[in-house]
Image (cartoon, helix red, strand yellow):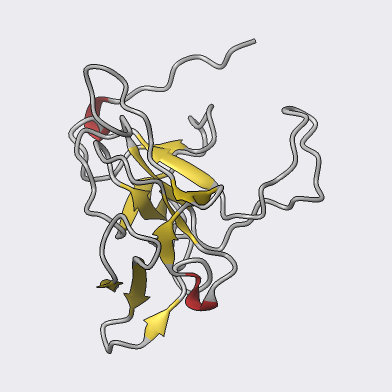
Length: 168
């Protein structure tokens, strides 16, 4: 997949569109497959906010083709606060394509309802991903204890990562 930026970054008009290799526009929400391989051990992550950046970008569920744009609250562009001594997000933040958090469903574990967006995901690998791209992430079902946290399969951390014990 490739992307095309329109407008100036950090503006209300800025948008990122996804395209197939033949330049056909696609929706990162609906057209990118959730799984990156036939064995269903690797998932695709749509990177909304790359590591060390501040602009709070998100897939727009209300605009045609579900492009990526900067989140707005009370008419102002949203930015992530720094966490001294670091700048921006400490991880790559994004969404899992073809997933959705149902706002009418109350989760019995968190007592919270879905936010009407794709499932959020944090990739805690060692390198920032390119802005608004699709990154393959490892999914170890037998070891997954904290849904939504993954390692990029190309991360140096992936080879020696271990999963902490599940909290009781």
